[in-house]
Image (cartoon, rainbow, N blue to C red; front, side):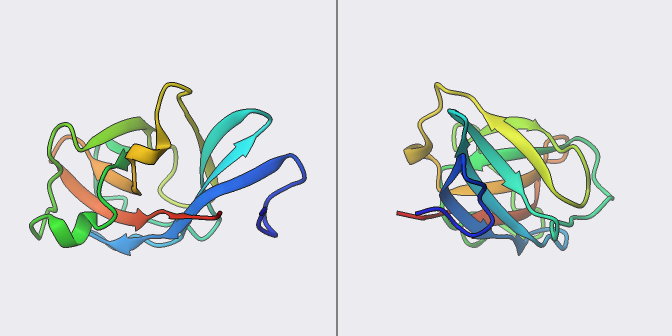
Length: 130
């Protein structure tokens, strides 16, 4: 079932809303299949703090990253996540390709993470659209 925001040639696999981690982070994330490519999309309402160097978009194995990590930084453990790409913009709509060899069933949330200081800015649990 495609969501109203999906175009005719894209299908929403899962989606979620960001919750705050170390810094306020908001907006929605969708993982879609579009023309045979899997893409993580941040929507136009996406916004996070500009105070972090080396921010990256990651997929995480836990659906409750913020609840299962320690404040204030909410550090991630090696092996619990995979880095998709550096964050392109602190706000607004943006897309990130997901490698074909990645099993999406292994990952249950999308995270904005400061790699340099191991600080989670925000996390969104992914709920399946099926």
